[in-house]
Length: 63
Image (cartoon, rainbow, N blue to C red):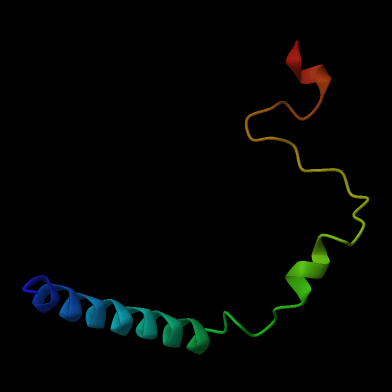
């Protein structure tokens, strides 16, 4: 029974932290556009991927 004296305040602190994080996310626009990121995966992209960091730009530089 004494464990409840520990668990109830801890749970209230965790609920308060979750509420503050949710309020921060809403205030900073994290939930403004929920549809576009899901549709981006369906869009065709014919552009080649950018070269990897540290890799030579083409084969002539490799030696």
